[in-house]
Amino acid sequence: MAHTHDNTKKRTFSHLTPYDRGRIGALRDEGKTLQAIADVIGCHKSTISRELKRGTVTQRKSDLTEYTAYFPETGQAVYEKNRSRCGAKYKLVKAAAFVHFAVKKMQQDHWSPDAVCGYAKVNHLFEGIVVCAKTLYHYIDLGLLPVKNIDLPLKVTRRTKNKRTRQHKKILGASIEERPSYIDKRQEFGHWEIDTVLGQRKKGAALLTLTERKTRKEHMIKIEQKTAVSVHQAIQSLKDLYREAFPSVFKTITSDNGSEFSELTQAIDSDDVTVYYTHPYTSSERGTNERHNGLIRRFIPKGKAIEDIDDTLISYVENWCNTLPRKILGYQTPNEQFAEEIAKIA
Image 1 (cartoon, rainbow, N blue to C red):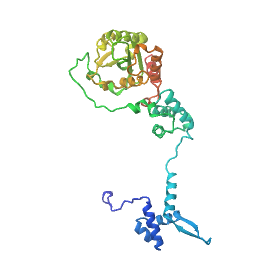
Image 2 (image 1 turned 120 degrees about the horizontal axis):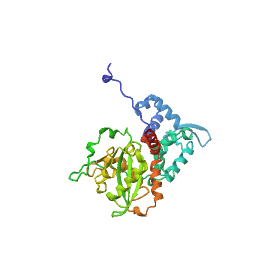
Image 3 (image 1 turned 90 degrees about the horizontal axis):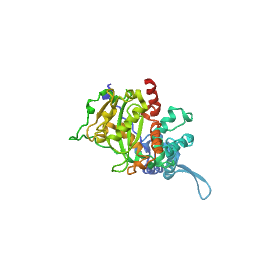
Image 4 (image 1 turned 120 degrees about the vertical axis):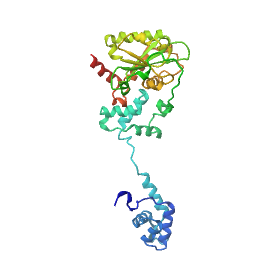
């Protein structure tokens, strides 16, 4: 018989309700058999047998003689007590060392639950006694940990946006449409995205951020103004840092159409480095860099003047981004993967 034409009735099961238990008690008082009661309730007679045992208690009469009787209320109370013991048990006690580690990382180092769990598993910490990221989120929602949702910025701020492309804005150079498709796969090192992070919405200092697409390596450079001249100076500092390796480290740079990047090609001044510009108003085409800008905003909120920010804090934030374990990197850090790629060049 074909499986699609079988006539086997699917078995379904449900728990007895307080109403069912009341009917069982009434039918039992009438002297009905187990099978007769089961036929009325719509279950197997063994279910009735177990229920009668569950709800039967010993009573004592006024003359001190004892007798047994079934009480629906007793059966329901025992059932509810047993149900409360069902389900997986919390691993808070068993995984106490890991939970303490996770709380510290989330509160002090601003790691996400996923980063904490992945890092612990990849590095074989706590003898494998850890909980998954979903369980950590569950513990937080239940209030079992001192961490609150407000301590997890992405959880309370993430919003979905519809992708859209606007037209009628000047393109400053080669379009992202001309960028080779293999770059999208992130299998080759040396392809960067660039942007600026502003403090106050007026002229003043800004942060120039560059993110390598494969390793997620982040560079943060404080510039005096959001101008092409300041960007030129920042690019020169990177060229001084990497020297002859610069064309191997920076093969392409993808930018938006901001005026500060209008002379980016001239600033790089290398035939081995290509600059591509995204479509107007399409920050999603620089998603990696935008994601890192969001991480930076955890420490440098909007409205805070960049010129008032100490260089020590900027270095700290840059290092934090580069030492944060990433799920997409197999819970390695950007610094670790970047070092591996640099070693190949050397």
